[in-house]
Image (cartoon, rainbow, N blue to C red; front, side, top):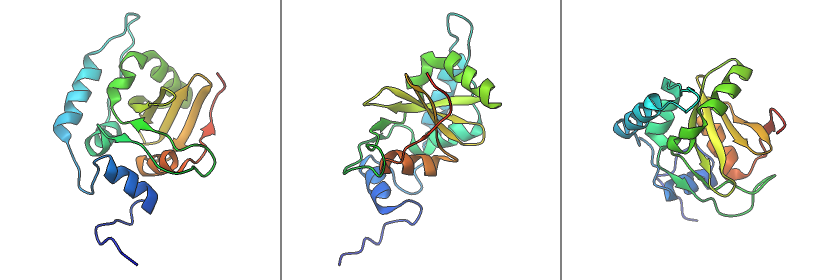
Amino acid sequence: MHTDRTSTTRFPVTVDVALRAAGWQPGRWDMRQAEIWADTLREHTSPAGHRHTVFPAAVEAWAEFGGLRVTPGGPGRQVAPATFHLDPLHGLHHARTLGDLGRALGTEISPLGEETDTAALLAIDTQGRVYTIDHTGDWYVGPDIDHALTSLIAGTEPTRLTTG
């Protein structure tokens, strides 16, 4: 049996494989790109005056995982594994939606990326909790980025927060 000495115990094997195939590796950290995204989001104001909030949990998630296009293989546990692109600019024009959800949850929320097959918006709050927002409602994906990535890649059904 072949053992991969570069594997980590941070993620389950299938999740680790999908993340590495997308270009992630332990220690990946692109703060320069994360700051570019932060500045772009901070500078954007919607026509109705809505603005994005940017905070450390979002910037750290962007620095480590930003830019990855993840395409999991195989069946999911409960739902199909999500194909997603971790680029906060997918949420650029959703400042009001994210602000509304943040107020409902008593926190602030920043964009994280998009599920590319469904166009569901991925978002993160100040505590690092991850959500997805689609035409059917708002969903809780995980208590932190690691759990959220594991859930998305493994096909674990998220918890519904609201109905559309």
